[in-house]
Length: 110
Image (cartoon, rainbow, N blue to C red; front, side):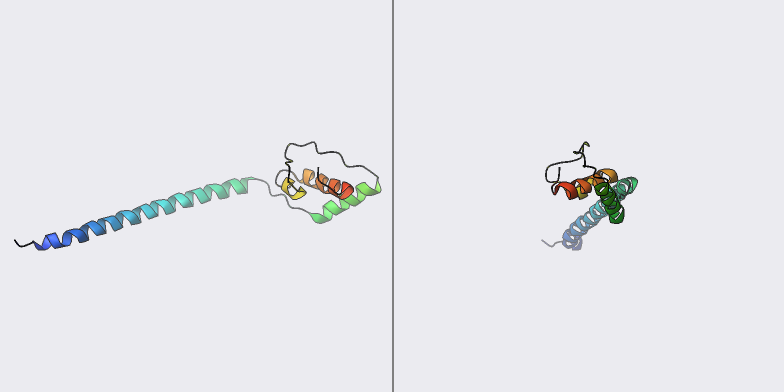
């Protein structure tokens, strides 16, 4: 029995269908990733940027040392074991500055 010419092309049609659906899925994934990236960018940009401002921190520390003011223990809610002062910068610049003064005065973190 002879096969029809279309029967020979059947695997080609199946393969092309698979490839087309795979490319459509890849485009959907790219769109989803782009949306997720845009959302993450919006969240990051909505938060305030707190720079270290080392000159201001050094001036503050020097003025407090001249006045003989002891730094207070940490009163905030962001400090965690293993943190450094730089970890506080993401929450509050004043807490960062006070942590730097505490570290300079006592030679250790909270």
